[in-house]
Amino acid sequence: MSESTRREFIRRAPAVAAVAAVVPGAVALDRQDDDHRNKCKCKPPVKEAHWPGGEPPENPLFSPVVTFGNLVFLSGIGAHFDGDITSHTEHVLNELERNLEAVGSSMEKVLKVNVYLNSLDDYDGMNAVYLGRFGKRPGVRTTIAAAAGIPGDSLVEIDCIAAI
Image 1: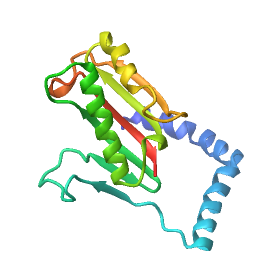
Image 2: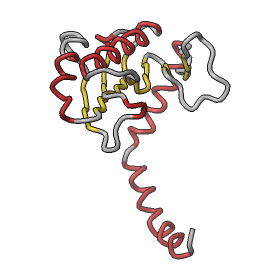
Image 3: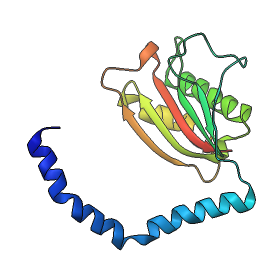
Image 4: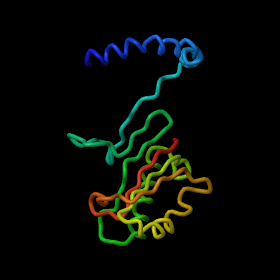
């Protein structure tokens, strides 16, 4: 940190302290959480990685499925075979469903979905397969076309966050 940056920080520090003093609710919420944990003997959530076959590879780059408390996070799943957007989307959604069910969740419990398309020309075809797969109250969704394409030549990749 440069001398001028340090001086600027020290000059502004009283303002930061004043803001903290005006927001006592933030401290009270922390105390409420601690009180609740002590009364109910709740254990804090634990991050767990889940692997096909149960065992992780020797040096994993990322985890395919992670649970934390009552949430499940699925890494992006693509379709790495020849086919059109319909067959790729169907494959990816089936894999998402299989992974969700393996950790006690379901497509109906999905809260957030990210869809990455190789081309926006496939948007309607992907939507035709996607429609209805997440129940009557689907989670929120973001869909983009990846500028450089999807790794592994998939036409679509999808990841999600769900409740357990």
